[in-house]
Image (cartoon, rainbow, N blue to C red; front, side):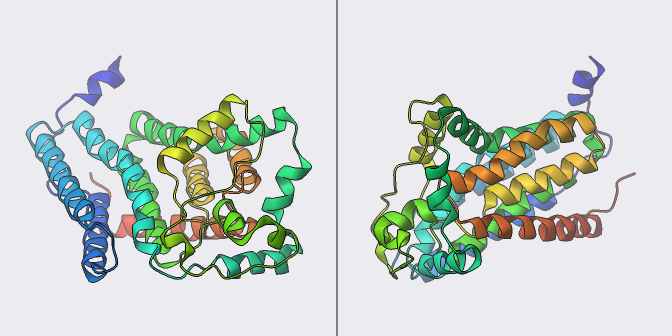
Length: 323
């Protein structure tokens, strides 16, 4: 009961300005707005990009004002919660930018072939077709946002003094990935295999599809047991927000790796080991459902490690511990 009382208790030393992560988001907002204006002759409809940013800035400032009027943990959580919810708006928008750059999947599929001697994303789902295995893979992939929620809520309720640092690391990592996705147009197997023709892929031929994805969003049918509950869940999420973008590195693997680092740092073994099975399934699932090349997964591990270390250090520098 005390925990819930603390949520609405007025803070004696409230945060006065924007939070560090809110400044990061403002920076991303400005960067992509300038990019949109620079590419205005190519982008098909600039209005949603401009007005979307205006609304996000206004909502951010409005919640900041509410927090200043009622400075408590609940209103602070609302500020962070807004930015987490808005990730689903920011992600598909990367496609509006990178669709105007020549696609690079032929290079990455080639690297995959050189490194593994095959296309794991093509062969994995063909080798394991059992409904139970399929559902486990889709369960792993569907656990992405629930895992983010688990870490967010755990730090908010159990490690509040480290809550803002944890959310800074998570959200800033997201936006770094988004910047990479904008300037590195790799769609991943689920889009490229269809555009390049599965027969070419099976024969180790990876044609350059150039600007194909500037006007095409078709993808291959997701592998697995199509009658499964988690299969349907993943398909619904893909239909709602997936675009031919954001393959390298895998942000699903990268963000969940960061979540595992945060779970370990929280010194809570039940949390860490409870998340571990879903994390392992996630790493395999991204290749199984053909969302990513295997090298995307490896890049996700590497980038997550770098981001976690750098962002943890950076937060301590710009936001010293409040006493």
